[in-house]
Each structure stands twice: as structure tokens, then as C-alpha cells.
Amino acid sequence: MNIAWLQLPDALDQARLPMPPATADFLQVAQLANLVTSLFWGTNDFYVSPENQLAGATARQDMRTHHAVARVADRIIGYAALSLPFEPTADPTAQPRTAEVRVVVHPDFRRQGVGSALLQEAEAEAARRGRSVLQSWTDNALLDPAAVGSGPVFVTGTSLQTGLTPVVRPENKPDDGPVTVRRQAPDARFAAAHGYGLAQVEVVSVLELRGAAGAALRAESGSSAAQDHGYEVVGWQGSCPEEDAADLAELLGRMATEAPAGEVERASEAWDVDRLRAEERAREGMGLTVITTAVRDRATGRLAGHSDIETFADLPQAAYQGNTLVHPEHRGLGLALLLKAANVSRLLRHRPEADRLYTWNAAENRAILRANGELGFVPVATHPAWQKPL
Ligand SMILES: CC(C)(COP(=O)(O)OP(=O)(O)OC[C@H]1O[C@@H](n2cnc3c(N)ncnc32)[C@H](O)[C@@H]1OP(=O)(O)O)[C@@H](O)C(=O)NCCC(=O)NCCS
Figure 1 (tube, rainbow, N blue to C red):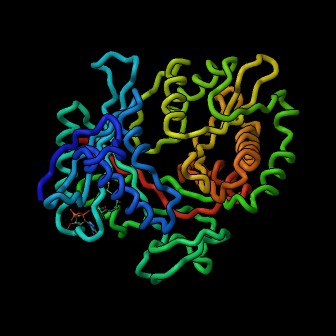
Figure 2: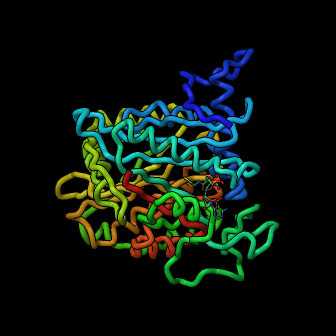
Figure 3: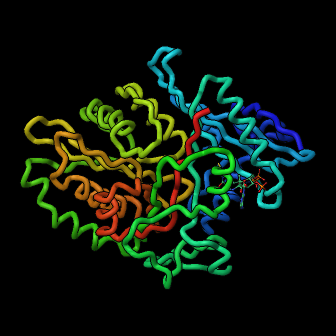
């Protein structure tokens, strides 16, 4: 086995034959990424096309991803993706200290030291690039696959049929107590074996959209938050209207520091309209359309909060909850639930073909988890954050 850093192609020239080697290498990485997520979930709801994986690695000015690959002959059997956040407007010496790593090893090659070798290479590269805090987010099943046997498993309360990873079985529905990370699972064992501590637990929940209209409508129409306190509910698909762009950029800038982060080190992010527009162009290139609902404070005409959902042109059955943020001066009025419910209704109107909406929330964020429960979301896995100072 040897380990090397990939030279990423400028574009995936899949139509050109013979296929350029950089394209073939990146396609191997992209296929391995999709194999491992679909084995975990038993669905292709998290499929990311090779083109979008490449765009995710290269097209954003505030994030760059490098890939170290482990090869046996010409076959890539594992990779480490090392993502470095950049602050576009900060001076080069004031860049974030953090780097994110994701190690993936093909199931046929596990427990042979491949993952450890990749992680060691990624850590060394992060240090060379001046990063001193390594972070990793993994998928952790709520139940042990071995304990519940193989075969199709249904997620409680939904028609989501999973394959190899039992997410939740109807008879094992977790009670309303806190959802916890399974420390015996491979991701947790691997993290612990390499000195990573659990920095935060995110709960992954799914909403079955076919039956979601009623609860969303009840939450939306049952809320008098907007009328009582003088807000107007507005929304759009795709890029933000010019009149609201500066306000939305400010709200997005708050996300980095105001969303609960547990022990996860988060660098502050400076957002302005230019950064928002650059992000929107990058999304558009990936066939990613964001569906947004916001509340406007009638007294000032300014946005007081927003909630957004991501949809992909090449994955119409799934949608992903993005940010939900209420400006600190407008909290405690019930706007978050209203925003989320109204945005689910907007999703149902604009994407009637979507089956499932996924969301990731900090386990300590009880208010949002309660709001999710009201809308019909069911917890299906955790997404723990691991962190290690180098
Ligand atoms: C986690 C993952 C990368 C491990 O890859 P790997 O090549 O099997 O890892 P290694 O062989 O280097 O394992 C190193 C140590 O991690 C721990 N470990 C890894 N997998 C384990 C498992 N299934 N059960 C228990 N311990 C495990 C052990 O301590 C192991 O050392 P040992 O084999 O000497 O006991 C692999 O299972 C994977 O790709 N999982 C899906 C993606 C993922 O969760 N990535 C998380 C890391 S960012």
C-alpha cells in the first residue's frame, strides 16, 4: 500500500477518452465516498455526484479540500479528505486554526491500519499548513447492527427502509431521553484510538414528507408569533432578493458563533453581500437550490431570522435542513418554530417530489429538538464531532 496526495483535476472530463488519470483517480474517491455513506444509510439519500464532490473541494473561496489516498496497485482503497476553512477577507496570518478531516476505508480493507496511516498523513499535512486543531464529524448508528441482525429495517414512524445499518427499529424506539453516541461503533473506536475527544453530539433526524403537511400547517397557523409581535413572513427560492441580501449576510455571519457548538472550536466568519453572492454562485453550479423562509420586522423593515433547506437537482427525493437563526434581539417569541414550519410548507409546495427532509441539531438544543418533534421529525442517528489539538 502507498499513500499519496491527489492532484485534483480542473474538471471531470468523463466524456474524454482515454480518461485522464486525474479524472479516474477522483472518480474512484467519489465512488468510495458514496459507497460508504450508502452502506451506512441503506439509501442513496446522501449520494453526491463526482462533479459536486469536486466542486465542493475546489469551488469555494472559504474552504479547500485536499485528498490523501491509499492505493494497492491502481486501486484506491481509502482516502482522507482534509478540509481547510479560509476567511476570504482576513489577513493570511489570521486564518482559522482548525482543519476538518474525514477518513474513509473500503469495508474489505478495514482493521489493517489503512485508516490510521491516512489519518497520520492528514494530521501532518494540517500541521504543515499551520492548522493546530483537527476536527471530524462521523455517522454513528443509534443501534448496533450486530445486535439487531441484518435485513431491511424501518425507521420508526417513517417508511424509510434502510439496508445494512439499522437506524432505528420500531420496537426499539428510543424514549424521549437524550440520544447518545454509541462508543463501541467503529467511528467512535477509531476516533478514541487516535486521541480525539467527543466535542459535541449532533442528532440526525428525518421527516417523512408525504405525511408532513398537516403538522407543518398546524404549527404555522397555530403560531401567532408574527401577528402578535409585528413580523411579516417572506421567502424565496435560490438567490436572495437584493433588498434583503445585506440582512441575510449578517444572519449567516452569526451562525458560525451563535449556533450551539459544544466543545467544537469555531472561528468567527465575516459575511457580506459579496461573500453571500459567491456562495450562491457556487451552489448554483452544483444544482443546489436553497429554499428560504425569513421573518421581516415590520418596524424596521429588516430581517429578524431565517431558515433554509437545501435541494439538489440530481437528488430530488431528499432535502436537507440548513441554517435556522433568529437574531438575538428577536428571540423567545416562537419565531424559530414558525420559520421551520413555514419553510417545510414551502418545500412541500416547491418540491412535491421530495420524500424526506434530514436535519442535524445539537443534542443540547432541546428547544429545536422539541420543535422538530412537533413537526414529525424522528431521530435516526447521531453525527458526533470529534476534536484533537495537534
Ligand atoms: C473508521 C474507519 C476509517 C477505520 O478504518 P480502518 O482502516 O479500519 O482503521 P485502522 O485499521 O487503522 O484502525 C485503527 C484502530 O481504530 C480502532 N478501530 C477501528 N475500527 C474498529 C472497529 N470496527 N471496532 C473496534 N475498534 C476499531 C481500533 O483501535 C484500531 O486498532 P486495532 O485494529 O489495532 O485494534 C473505517 O471504519 C471507515 O471508513 N468507516 C466509515 C467512515 C468513518 O466513520 N470515518 C470516521 C473516521 S473520520
